[in-house]
Structure formats: C-alpha cells, structure tokens
Length: 519
Figure 1 (cartoon, rainbow, N blue to C red):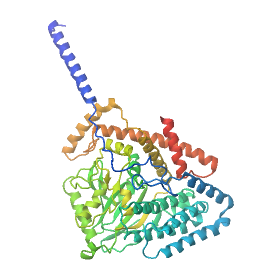
Figure 2: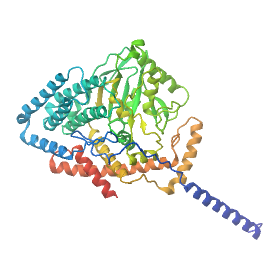
Figure 3: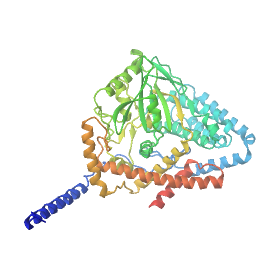
C-alpha cells in the first residue's frame, strides 16, 4: 500500500499486541475474587443440626439455644391420615368432633384468665387441640370461618398474656412461635384444601382493633392509622430466604411504616435493596408482589403514649421527612445499631426508637453456621438483628389484621419448603456458587452503577452490594426457581394420585428430593 512502510506495520502490530495483552491482563485481574468474609463461629451456643420442616405440631428437642425444631415427623403423618379419614367420612360424621374440640379450646382460654406463665400446660393443650381440629376442618371447609375466628381470639389472648413475659427468654420465644407461627400454618393448611371461591372469602383475618388517635384511612376494609406497621412477604426467591433465614423461620420478609397526613394521604416508608429509603403510595405498595400482609399497631396503653398520644404519628412523620430528605442507603450488614443506613426493619425501629419506644423487644438470632455463611455471602455481618417475622411476637404491638393472596398461598409454601431444604444443604456444606467468568462484566456493571449513583440514579447493582454478591444473588434466584419448578411437578403428581394438595411436610420432602436430584 502506498505510504505504508514495513516499520509502520510492525509498530501497528506491536500496538495491537500490547492492547491485546493489556486487555487479557485486565480481564485476568477482574477475575480475581474478592477476599471473602467468614462469619465468626458462635462459641457459646451448641447449635443443633439443620432446621426440620417448620410446620404445626409436636414436641421439640430444645437445648436452650440455636434454631427451633418441631422435630416430630410422626405427628405430621398422623394429622394427614386424620384428614384423609375425615374426607372419607364426610362433614356430618365429624361435625360433633370439630365442635367439641373448639369448645374445649374456649374452656381452656377461659381457665387461663388474664394472666398465665408461658410454660402453662393449658397453652400446650390449646395448641395440640387446634392442630387436631385443623385436620378435620380441612375436610369440611364450611367450618373454616369458625376455626379461624377461634384462632384469631387465641392470638389476641396470647399477645395480651405475653405483655408480662420476658420476650428474650427461650421458653417465651418457643411458646410464641408455636402458637403464632404454628397455628397460622394450621389455618393455611385448611385454606389450601378449600375451593378457590371459598378461600377468597377468608382473605382477610381480623385481629384486635387497637385504639389509636392518629390520622387514619381505610385500606382493604380495615382502618389503618399513622404509625401502624405493615409486615409483608414478597414474591422473590430472596424474600423467601429473608423470611426463613432465622433461628425461628417465619412468614414475612419486609417492613413498612405507615404515615397518614391531615389530607388522608397514605404514605408507606420503606427501605429497598435497590433504592434505599423511599416512600410508596398505597397503589405502588400493593402493586409490588405481596403474598401476605399483616397490620401491626403499638398498644395504646404503652407508657410513652400516656405522655404523647400522637407519638405514633410523630414517629411516622419523622421517617417520612427523612425519606424526602437526603438519600439513605440500604444496610446490607443488617446492623440495627447504625442509623446512617437502614434495612427495612430499621425504618420502623429507628423512627420509634428516637421517641423512646424500643421495638423488637425479643431480638432475632441467626446461629446455624451454614445459614450464617450464606447470608455473609450477600453482605450480612450481624447475626443478632431485627427480622421482619419476629415483629409479630413483640408484646408492645397488637395484630390488627392479616391479608393473604389465596391464589399465591400454595406457591409461597413451595418457596418456603425449597428454602428450608436448601438451608439444610447449607448446613451440610453446600455453598452459594456463582459463574466466575462473569465477574469482570459484573465489576464493569458495578462501576457503571457507581457513576449512576453519583447522579442520584439507580444502577444495575445496588449501592452497598458487591459485584460478587450480585452474581451470587442471580445464581441463587436461578437455582431456587429450578427447584421450585421441580417441586411443583412433584406436587401435581401427588395431587393427581391422592385428590388433595400436599401439606407442608410433604412439600419439604419433595424439596429435599429435588435438592438431592439437582446435585
């Protein structure tokens, strides 16, 4: 070619080679994994083996610490056989048995009076009787409203009695969990055996309409006051992990604080992984995937409210003002003692804490080594923290109402079963893998996100989340979804052969089998 000399070509080749070498070196450097952080072992806790199927039921083997375990598969099988027998007999044959059981529960509640100890055996009898009756009511959907009414009364009475109990005592935590989580599980096993149209009528379960002087609006048939707290369960795989990832696995993964202004506008103050502290309208809040929502309200007779009846509204209004102010990042470390960054639970606890109301009287613990290791992979550094599910057990709060999405309820149970089985695998050494060759691209996406963050925009990887954590999150989603699909297939086969939906303990076995097959 005219004007192109041999030295020029050589120089171009050298430059191209240097660029290629630099690209390879850069790619190799970006492949270097970040230094991992391992959670410290809990030297003071004798941690039990992996958490078993957390469903309604029987005696647990407790060593005073570590994850709660129901630990009685035989009880679940017996309840399932009881349900099958009731279906065969018909409702007329078991109606007397149902009425007798619920009448006995009413007697026990009356006997407990206004005060009791968490170890009172009458609570245990109420629990076992409600489980027994649930097995027959599941075969007789017409009796479900009465059963749920009794369940709601038990929940309110238990919360009233728990005011005098130490919320951090192991026997108190176990009693509250068995009664509140366990009996909710029994209610939902009933709902899942009902015809869809019948279940829709039971979407809303009312609790106690606790008095409040704060501004209010009506939401889905319930009066909601400024300062109320909504705990919910999202539909994402990580929502299931948040709900189940505790010594006392639960049903909720998110917390929002309600503010109602003088013009009856409702604001939901939340902390989201991708946006940090933010405000949502009623429409936007419920447009996000919400499988269940529970409404909680501070007791009106708390000493702090005697000095300031509008304390709840003040707390919510302060949180709203902060959300409208400078940006507050999401707290991946789950450090509830640091108010400069907030995870969802902190939105409520920090707002009330500034005014002298310390929510989460019973602090959450995460002690299983495998679960700690997994959560650490996502950036969690604190394993005594404020979990959304545990807010229900706080004696300072009253359950006002709970809404469920009946169409999504079975899917949520499958999600839970899959996470329980995955976490059992974590205790046996399973880790959260990620595609290492994607790390350079993820780091480029992280750098791009940081530029967007500087201009107040949301990037593909949230502030506070590393590129590696983002890849692990993506891989976790994919693995969870594959296992969920496998369990749904097994559940359909089960229903075809038995004529009824598999209860939770069957779903856990299916999930365990799916995990083994995936390996």
